[in-house]
Structure formats: structure tokens, C-alpha cells
Image (cartoon, rainbow, N blue to C red; front, side, top):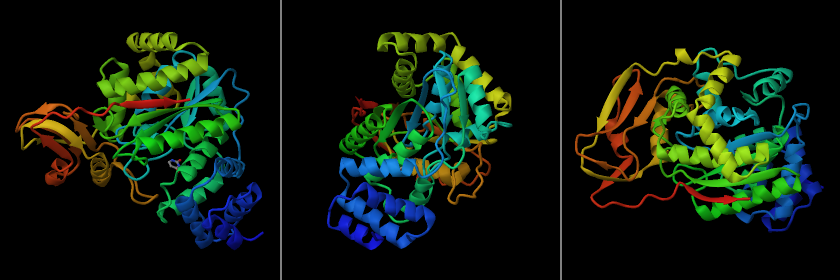
Length: 424
Ligand code: URA
């Protein structure tokens, strides 16, 4: 077998065998297959796609490329939730405590921000003292004790994805359904959960731009789950505007606290309830109505909030010490009308540029900066009324760039639904 023949086969749209896929992937991890050869194979996959059988093989080979977490000593079903990445998406900070307050085990590993999208680990590290690393034994004990632990990636899980993802990022091969499905599923399988809820973001601010592509990706990931004996449910949710109102690390922690204290925006509430109900159904093996009622009860009684406090202090953090940036500027609308569009990717890029995200892996983050929206898509705004607040350290801001992210018109346009569909 040789790599040139394998690339050539994919180039001519022929199906690769599992042995050929293993040869290419393992060779790349070991260094016998070079960057330029893997780039070529990835581009051929992007252009010509893969059969389901090829995607199963690719996922399986990646899944076995490193360590696999064994969480079997934790009693009960372990449920995981993963989002493909969006702007203002703080659902994990809310769902982890809320779902685990019902006794569902949430043993979760999360990532850092990627591009214009935020990451749960960065958000948690904005809480002074919070530890996002832990020994496996301590991680398991915490889940046994309080049903919830959340850390950054532990051990050498799926090294193939680490290396291939970095290459995809610089070779225009990120947006490929077989590559996204195998990348996400190999990591979810290796991190040891029994059941997985995937939130596939669709729209301007997301990796997947159309509902059709999201549906294809979802059914592929559900099929991979079935093949590997893991229940996977995908929720296709809208990312044409930021989720909730707060964007930026500390600000998103603040919005999550407020949510668990009972103050929430409609869109964030709808998504939390949709994903949370599925997690509780899976974790407690109960019906939809009962799961929803239980979630609602724990939200209203404050048990979700108490769990957040317990989880944060167990991992060394102190919620009373979080601090947003000291300078707050109010940005006003220059027109009256309906907010018809928010260019979410551009807005996410602005928040990244003021310091909430990274351009290089080693960049440090300014946790306190960000944006809080005063208006969302569908709202009416008057000229000179506040559109948003911006939290920064310096005064220099390109307000024009921010205003350009909003399309304001005289006619009302019906916003798209938040939840497109659920794929099981
Ligand atoms: N998230 C991942 O982990 N992998 C992808 O390929 C895309 C999003």
C-alpha cells in the first residue's frame, strides 16, 4: 500500500477500504505520511465526499488513534452535550448544573474558542480560581459525588484529530461533512459518555450554513453512534444571531448566572429546555413531558443555580469575584426600524478582536471584554435608542464596524425558528 495510490483512488471517487484509511491516518500521526500528502487526501475527500462505510472506518481509526477514557466505574448513565460552535453560546454553563441537579451524570470535556466562536473552557477560566484540569480519578470522583465535572481535554485523546484539524484549518478543508462528522464523533466516543446530545448550529455564524447540510451531518453522526452502540440525538438550531444577549467570557458567565436565577431571554430558554429535556430523558430514562417538568422545577426552585455554585467552588472558582471590563459604552442606533439581521460572524469577529478570543494558540484572553445586546432580531428600535453595550479597557472603538453588523429596515421580517428539527 502507498499513500499516493490512496490519494489517487479518492481523487477518482473510488471507495477506500478501512485498511487504506488506517494506513493514511496512522501514517500521518506517526509521521510517515507528510503534511502535503494528507492535505491532498483531505481536499479529495472535501471535493468527492465519502460513503457512509468510509466515514465509519475513518471515525473508528481516529477514535482508536490515542487513549480512550473509561468512565465505566461511575455509576449510572453518563450524558454528554456538544455544540458545533456559535456566538454567545453559553448553554453548557447552564445545562451542566441544571441537568446534573436532577441526578443525571454529566462528565464533560470541553474545548477553547475556535475562530470567531467562544469555548466553554475559556468561559470557565474567566472565573477566578477555577481549575479546568484534573486527574482522571478526581474527575470520576467529582461526578460520583455531585453528578457534574467539566474539564479541558484530558489525556492523549484522538491525536489524529488534533493533527488533522490543525491541517484542515490552514488548507480550506474544514467544511466537509464526512470530515466534520468523523472529527466530532471520534472525540465524543473517546471521551467515554454513554449518550450524547449534539447541538448542530446552522446559519451565518456557524460552520454549517444550510439546514440541508446540517440534516445530512446529523443523520451521519446518528448512524455512527448506532454503529458504535451509543445513542446520539442531534438538534439543529439557528445561529443567524447570537444566542441570548451576552457575548464574551465573563459576560456569558454573568448571563448564565442570571438564567439560573430565573432571568432569561426567550431564545436561550428555548434552546436550554430543548437540549436539557433530551439530556434528562436519556439520563433518567423517562418521557419528554416528565423530563421537561423536572427541568422547569429545578430552574424555578433555584436548585440549578445551587448546583452551579457547588460545581464552581468544587473546582476552585469563586463566582463572587468575576469582573467585566471597567469601561462600558452604549452604542445607539442611527435609524428607527426593525432589526432584520445581525451579521453574527462579523460581530463574533469584533468581540474576538477586542480581546475575547485568540488569533494564535498562545494568545492570552481578555476575559472581561465583550458585548451585551439590548435588541435582538425582530425587535423595533428607535433612532438614538441603545442597540448594545460594549465592555472594553480602552476608549478607541470602531463603532461604525459594529453598526454595520445590524440590518435595520422599515418592514418587519419574521425571524427564522430557533430549532429547525431534531434528528434521532
Ligand atoms: N468541531 C470539531 O470538533 N471538528 C470539526 O471538524 C468541526 C467542528
